Length: 93
Image (tube, rainbow, N blue to C red; front, side, top):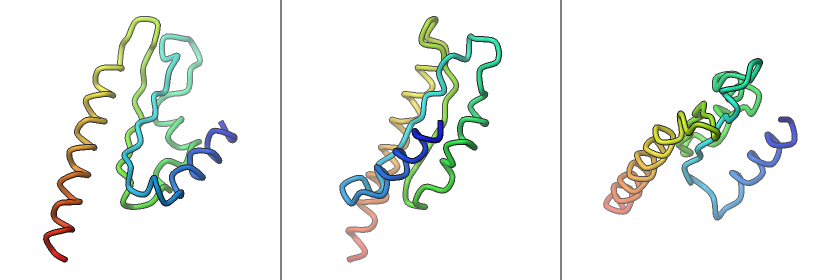
């Protein structure tokens, strides 16, 4: 997870990615001993990403699909919210 954390933070700092919503899928929730979504969020230091970056960590299982739909719905909501913020920012200029 440390390598994933480093890459996530590096990618989110790139100028092309400023403010791009981030959905982290904490897969393998069907497996005993899997890290919870909260633990994945903590270990990836998701809350330390830029304040303008909307983020969500969703527990899921790719085997049975549990958690995938709510995660994608949350991503959609974050995209809409980002567009709304961008429009409001343009109006202030």
